[in-house]
Length: 382
Image (cartoon, rainbow, N blue to C red; front, top):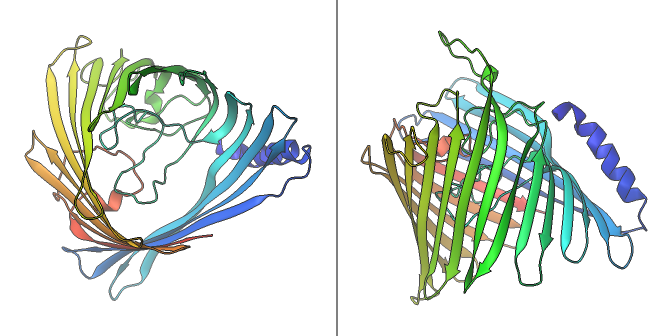
């Protein structure tokens, strides 16, 4: 699908050019970082990313609007082994390429876009189409090629429907990518319930086993149908409460069991200390079995998040993860200072060197998944 990015950009520009003259909005985010590993002080890992975005659009008439976004991802990374030379790699690819037609209570968006939903904040069973790592202050994630429609009712209920096509990379919790030539489809309905809301979600896809390299494994039929069902809810009481549960069925794949069940419960509260100490906790249970709720294999993960603002400029954040089965802690702490256009981050991480935990598969912050070290990041928004 990446080969058609230029065609998509041309279509977006053509559609928006047909609208009455509207000023284009240009913005971008430039970030650079450096990692220092405690166990390899002579080696430095560095990287940069630039996300320029052009927003176009205008009103079709008094009721409808047509707009679009064109954004690219220029990125590079490398390592420097003193006193040897640096090893570098860089690339550029489409980040967002979408066209949206919207009215007062609906929107229809087509192209490369971010789709995410659900009540959980850290341990997210509904991380189906994005790979946002809560340790990443920029929340950078690749998009998916999709057609997404949403309708909003007067009572705050809303309904979603989507179709995906041409996505050949694993997304969300997937470790087997989809067949890019087979459409994926699904939907979501979200309803108000008291001082909160509840939602049900469904998605179907064809996993493509031929994309994997498995020595000694004979693949008779590379396409494996997969269905996902989910229920989630969130309520704002004296404290915030939420839950999120998904059931995945993949018959004939390479998973040890055909059913996987994820369930997260969470809560948060802001304590009246100083400027307000915000605390958040979540617990995730992952089960696998031969039946929808079988428990042949069970794993548990917990996470605690805390953040505190020191005035308008400085913010301190910390996240601790615990794998109950391996008795392993993963720790992350970040201090940030923000100005009008500049942001500075000092991130500390302390994790097991060898870990079987993959809570954020394929995240763009993979350097802080293992080991102990320091990350310095500088960000410019324009």
